[in-house]
Image (cartoon, rainbow, N blue to C red; front, side, top):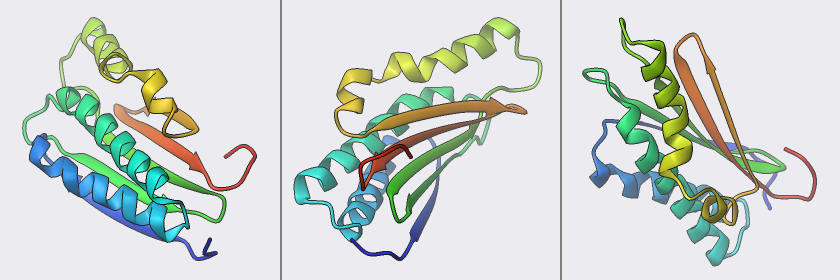
Length: 139
């Protein structure tokens, strides 16, 4: 494993043809971190699945999904950032958006590929982070 950190940023529209770029970034960072080919492939699939589940939440016109893949000394993180709601949206619509990511991904399958999923929403901006530990212990 290399001690250097690395970061790849992607800014995507909700076009599934772009998922390959996300998967490639995840696999590249996983390989750079010293993970075996099976773990690299799992990281790619997990990143793609999370993006695919998030695309329906990009309901604002010209909405983008920002994806950051980062390698730290003890973990890899794939962070998806998007504006969750549009102006005038009802509370029920916001609740639906918050729950849609969980409904769109088979959580058991996703967690078999990574170690942790964190989600938070602040000021209308949602961040979902997939964490793959490189060493035993919490991220």
